Every structure is written in structure tokens, then in C-alpha cells.
Image (cartoon, rainbow, N blue to C red; front, top):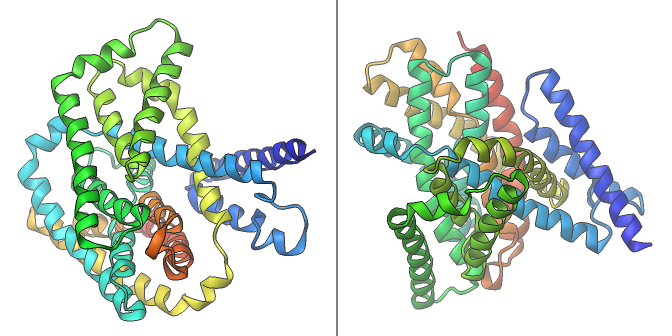
Length: 392
């Protein structure tokens, strides 16, 4: 009977995601906010308060959704790595470095607000990351929808996103080592971060000196075997990362970089994208399912201050970054407005916080920070998309 109920829960989740995806596709809007909202509604904190049937009630269904969420993070970062253009990074490294350095100023509002309200360095650090990183997926989608993919503003934004994506990999490495390692001793923290960096460096060196391994590993005429090999290797390396106390997202990113350098990139995108969409949807649903909406009222003041300050701050850092490269006023305005959107990476930080162990497993980190991230992303993803579509 338990298995039957769990299967019913999973069926409800997937068909609901399918309906939402169809609706948002018809209106050419992002589905991420609605995936999160439906997770909140169908989860234990809304439907569960009024009914014995809610998503996540059955332990096996909850574990599947939780594991599906981990796969979602893995695929999100894998595809980011897959499309990562190292040649472009090296060619435009000076320009990207300058844009990124200006953009790093956006860490400041989150850190200051987080420490002011919570008097906790780790909370301030996490809030800094949440408000810093723009959404590559949502911004890229909006640029494509508007037909701006080949414009100067698109180039400026995408180069800024390249720096952010690289920086957030370092941020996730440090934060996951701290949150999942469960140790606050300086010596042990240094050892854990050292091990994490050693794992990443070893992986990067292997990618550099043995690039042919990935080509040969994926070389098969069977699509079915191809998919099994690709997902198997992504899951294996990501699993090793988790055992070492590192986010699976980091490992998946570098595997994506390695696969992106092979002749199989187009095939990987074609065959694995459905998995990314399915498990990515489950990840956003899972984030919503774990979010208690009653906490929203308690953080409303912090949310309003953060939304107002980071919107203005992000706009002007991006605007003047574009002006520095001699872009005109309207193009610079589009860049400033475009970078406001926050999304998937802020939620990945929230997911890490919710899984914190040891001395960091306190309510303000495991409950308040995820709730803040969800509400912040809901506001900023909608606000950024609306402003960019209507800026003239």
C-alpha cells in the first residue's frame, strides 16, 4: 500500500509539472517560479495542514523527490559546464575579468544585510552568494525570446555570467565544505577546503591531460548505451564529491566542461536535455516543498530591503560596467536591467543551507535562509524578466 501511495504522489508531481510547463510555454514565460509555488502548495506546509494526503508524506516518495532534486542540481551544473566556452574565456579573459570584478561588488549588500539582521558570519556569507549570482538560464532564455542573442548587450551580459558562473563554483566549493562538513575548527575547515580543492584540481588536471578518455568513453553507436555511460559517469563523479563533503554541483560542472570538449556535445544536449528538464523541475518543486510559507512574514522586512537595495545595486554595477566599454545609454540600461534576474543558483545555495549538519544545522540556516532564497528568487525572477522585456 505504501508503494502505491508513493507512486500516486510521484504521478501527481510529474503531471503537475507537465501542466505548468505547458502553460508557461504558451505564454513564453519561465516555469521556475511556478514550479516552486506548486511545491509549496502541495507540500506539508500548505496541503499537509489541511489534508492527510500531501506530497512528501510517504517516506519513499519524499526520498525519491529529494534524490531527484540532487539529480536536478547535477544536471543544471552539468549543462552549464557543457556549454562553457573555454576558448572564449581565454580569448576575452581581460574583458571578462574586469566585468566580473565590478560585478563582485554585488556580494556586499547581501553580506551587510545578513550580518546586520542575524549577527552571524555564515548567514551573511550565504546571503551574499544568494543575492550576488544572476540567473544564467533565465537571462539566456529572455535574450533568445527577445531576439537579442547577437547584440552588444547580450555579449556584455553573457561575459558577466561567465565570470559569475566560475566564481559561484568556488563559492559552492567553500560553502558546501563548511555546511556539509559540520566542523567549525579553523584547522579542520582548512583541511576540508584543501581536500575539496585537491579533488577539483585533480579532476581538472585529468581533463587537461586525458581529454581523449571522455571521447572514447562515449564512443558508441547505441543511444541507449550512450545515455547510460554519460549519466553513470556524471553520477559516479558527483557521488565521490558528496562523499568528500563537496557539492555534487561542482563535480557535475567539471564533467560537463570535459564532455563539452568532445565531439559528442550535440548528442549529449539532444539526449540528456529531457533528463535535465525533468529532474530540474523536481529540484525546484523540492525546494518549494521544503519551504514553510509562514516564515515569509517573519522575513518580509529583510526581503523588501534586500530586493530594493540589490535591484538598484545590480543595475548600476552592470550599467556602469557596460558604459566602461563604451556602450550607449539604452544598451547599458538593458544590460543593467537584464542582470537583475536571480534564479537557479540562488536556490542551489538554499538547498545546501537546508542540508547543513553539525554546528551549522541551526534554524536560521536550515529554514530561514532557504525561505529567504525562495521568496527572493520568486520576486527577482519575475521582476527581472518583466523589466527586461519592457525596457525601451
